[in-house]
Length: 86
Image (cartoon, rainbow, N blue to C red; front, side, top):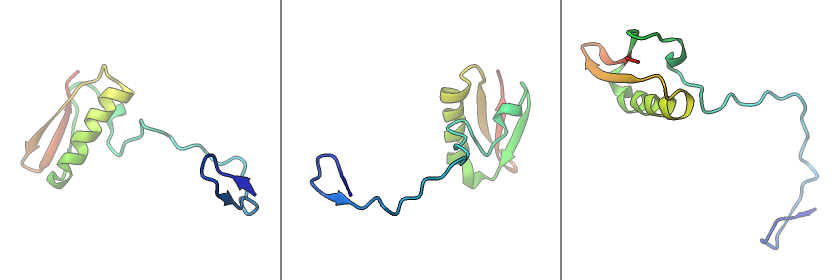
């Protein structure tokens, strides 16, 4: 049994299995959109229902993964278009 810090409760850790060689998650710079593969002037379209998702992904990508790349999004006849501009 292991005592949890500050809780005064005991937790049974006898059934926890230790695993080896489990791949580590890819992390915060993994996106369902092709930001890494885009050159200046390239664009892609997503359904308009995913507008908030793609706009949040653009912001996260620029802040956490590559602040030197810049993207813009605009409504398109086919949905929401994302362009790489810098």
